[in-house]
Image (cartoon, rainbow, N blue to C red; front, top):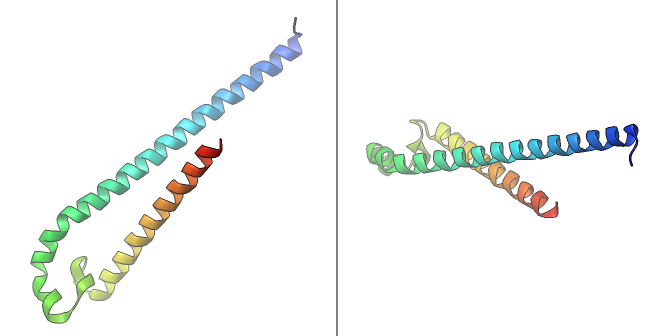
Length: 105
């Protein structure tokens, strides 16, 4: 038979396990939502590209401003493309790190 102190320790240990499990579930939910939002953003930008390219075809052909798809300025277009590429790289890196941690545990 356990003493009151042992039962209290067991209760605190179980409460910590439940809190840790809830925290992991919440983290995975946030990760899944972020991945879904990233994929949706990429799909929406990809679906809108043909319309944008058709509207800006004269600029692209005449002046060679291939990054101007996102902006009327070629420099700003390159900046936007660089930011989108960086964000995608960060998302993939975070996903890989989380998958590696999940395999270890």
